[in-house]
Structure formats: structure tokens, C-alpha cells
Length: 139
Image (cartoon, rainbow, N blue to C red; front, side):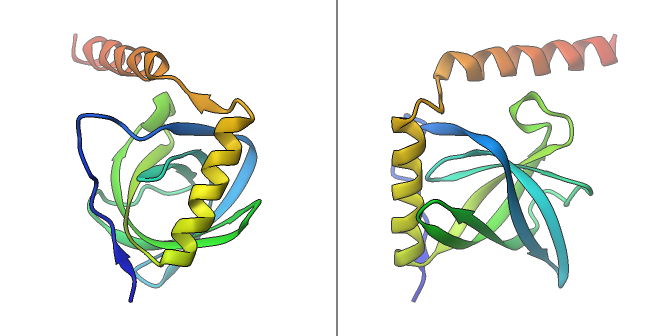
């Protein structure tokens, strides 16, 4: 039975890692197969660049090849413009098998150990850039 993901706490954000190469990811949403590029990854979700926007709240299945093997999970799509990239879309993990969760944890450990981690301060800069874009469009 798959592990249903429930974040422990919203107070501390899970460490994020930028992927060093254009890492392919494959998504199935409503029987449509989409290929994308994984931009960031964490133990709770990530961001992917797709050729088409998936509606917020849509569920899908993602498959990513990591250095520790394939990771498959059910995901929920969140807002667009993730990581300050207009064509990127955030997602969160909804359900993931224990063996896939272990491979994901190993991959995250390796990425962070190699220095691909994204510091919290960088996320603040991204937030401020998004806010400035919104204000510019509104004004």
C-alpha cells in the first residue's frame, strides 16, 4: 500500500535542490502523457517545466530517473511560475511507495551533499521577483 504523504510541519520547509542537468521527467495526467524538465526537487515536491500548463489541483503520476533509480509518485499540481520561471509549475507529492520514497531520500541526500541545495534566502529573492512582476503588470 502506498504511503500517503503528510508533511510533518509547515513551519520548516524541506530542503530543496536544483537539478544540475536538464533532468527529464514524465507525467501522466488524465491519460495524457507529458514530458518535462525537472527544475527543483525536495522530499515534499518540486518544480517542473512542461510544454503545457496543467490546471492547479490536477492529479497526475510522475516518473523521474534519479542516480539511485526510478522514482514514481502521485502528485498534485500547484501554481505556475515556480522558482521564478514563468513556464515552470510546482507540484507536491500525494502518494509514494516506501521503496520510491527511499530512492528519493537517497537522491536528495546526494544532491545536497554535492552542493546543489537551494538556500532559503534564494527563495525570498524569487518571491520578491514574483511580487515585483505582479505589481508591474497590475500598475
